[in-house]
Length: 57
Image (tube, rainbow, N blue to C red; front, side):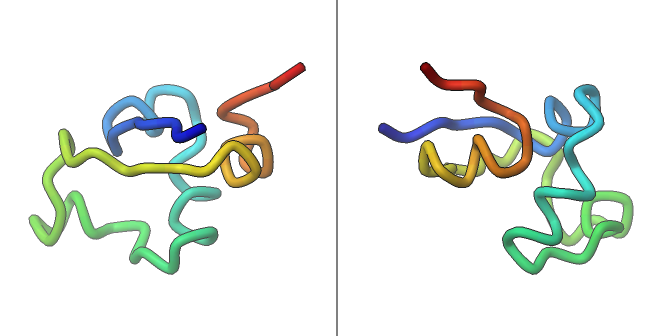
């Protein structure tokens, strides 16, 4: 399974910092125009569970 979200959605959920740590993104990359706020980020089920994006079964 793949789970898709965007920086904007992740920021709204308070999960952006955890996502950045997981993928090695600069936490300010959206503010610095290095990444668009609507860019799709694809997570595996395990990654999404790790940051609290997906609860699973």
